Image (cartoon, rainbow, N blue to C red):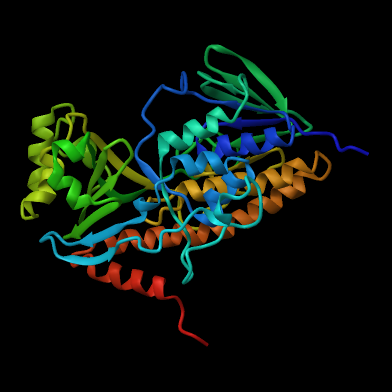
Length: 409
């Protein structure tokens, strides 16, 4: 007998929500994404991210998107240099062990991806906008309802959820509501009163366009991947993106209200650059050029996270994936990867059918808590190694130990 298919609502069209929708679509499970943005072109999607073999890449492979990933990934983006404020080089990974995609790209579906050897995963860089376009293009027209800002959620006696939106008719009921709505998730309020907490780190994001032609010395400094300088509880983290773009994050330990109370008018390019450069006054000229020569658009950033070990009491008919479930700082490169892994694991639980769905969703949550807790702690530990008086010394030592792995038994 064929199992009845559950009706699924996904709130949020980020990588986790889109991945889940793609996986459900392939299994002919009815689902709809509700996204508050007006269209796929509503805003910039940020910089670049590394996709890990066992999480982000695996989810895309099982979603039938291997060839699409191969077309947008940049294995050379794994190159990494760690420096101090004097330009002293403490670590360099030239990426000599970059490999072809797992399985050599033979099949679009298949077994678990391979790693890079020596216990290291393959982690090619992918521009966030390219990843989003790949996922969006894999979904049929109409599956995503744009410009749907969620304002209320109701539940009936059968634990089926209905949604209310600003300026649009309500939708539902749904057998399962999946919150993929990010850091400040509205869906999360259905299962928890916990809110993100400030990580202690704020700063600005800047960008350089056509950097190879315009600022070759910055192009050389950043190289093919990333170049991060750390000292004095501050960091200048520069990443190469596609299309000749470099993005830099000038971050430091600050009070939570620094963005509002620091006295910088972030809409004023010259003032912002002048006052940000004062924080990095004794860094090298090339490092300061990452701020001084940036494009006029400068974005202040404050980093938030959910408390380490965050969990919620299971509630029938609703669950969370991605940042809604385990928001963390970016210092382990795990956020999007974990979100896509959430999507994959939850899809396994959903595609079986509606019978026993609640117990399977509960199992998904229990397994997810374990994965997320480990990576959130790693990210928190890395944050504290990045932002130290004598950084990057201890971070590099910890990184070397991670690469070397545990001693032989």
